[in-house]
Length: 341
Image 1 (cartoon, rainbow, N blue to C red):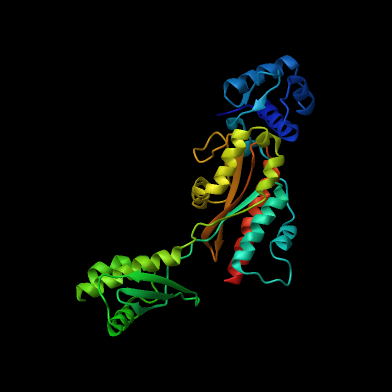
Image 2: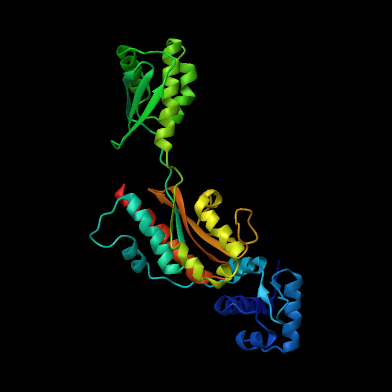
């Protein structure tokens, strides 16, 4: 969709004014704020063209116009001037000087930084934990009850109870553990699962079943709590009139925070893209509320993308201010996690 200079200028002025005060913008106001030497009649004609293109709409209660999701999209993609942000201020909030934090603490700080700087809700999809193990051990608890002990490369220990069809002896359990550790230690359980079928035919059937059960239980244990979403500042959205005035929209929004499924899907989609992504309400199937937008960016550890963070706020948000907040926080979180790994 191509707009001439006059139409671009008027659309930009309309969106910026509407974001600022939330009221429909009339031709007289646009004549003053656009800086264009145009008559009100000419402005009305251009506004009519923009409305026909689906970029602005006229509420029934006013002669002024407001941007549509399509208008917001045109604005953020082609007309937006991003405001600079002091990177050092974000860095200090994320990890104060002389303070060493755990990865989980740094991630929680990132969600709080996004929330406090934007005054909306900050979200971070935590890194997926790979199901790599260093070694396993089987402990016989009683007849047909075995404790699977999994040791990760970082020393973290996970336990899982296995209920088996066969009553394995202690020597059989040692034999199975030694085989797994010798042939598969340092791999992920997913890799082991793929190799089991071909490589374990030489073992007895009962031992094969034990190892398959161990792989399934181990994979579940090591990936437990994957895709956790850290959310900060949800209550900020209660003070946003565009959201709080509509109880149905507010209920959908907080259902999304509680269920987290669609939010994780949206963050997962944005992790596959490069740089800042903007999801505007009404144009994405993953957005339950038309009046809501999400600004996201992926973050990584040592150059590998491991998660996504973002800001959830009203469609009528100051994108030129929120975009650099999200962008810089993603870069600084990547640096903090990479240096701490």
